[in-house]
Image (cartoon, rainbow, N blue to C red; front, top):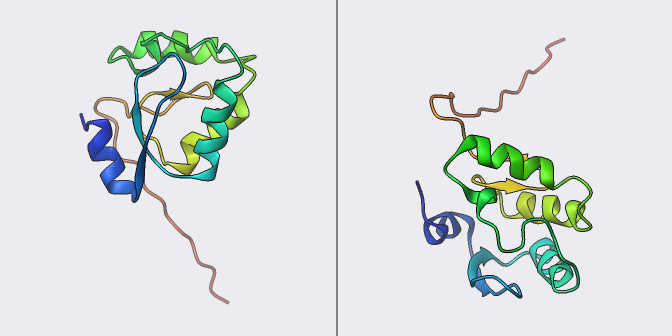
Length: 114
């Protein structure tokens, strides 16, 4: 599984972020991530201090995803995760961790011809 540092290397410029009560995290610098981390300083979230959101166990991540419902920063969390293309862990109630054995996600475009 990729480390946070290797995931950031794929996404572009990074900066270290420290969220009050957590360890420093390496994240790509995006306005959405900045707004999210700023909001975290003022609220207590269900994920604060817990590891279930990044657990290796899918059942633990499912419990974590349900705990996100009603969180004050749910929308900001989802926007931040989308802006950095997070691929692992639970963000805004969505488990972004690929399922073991699942085919990779692909995008197909269908063109109409006249």
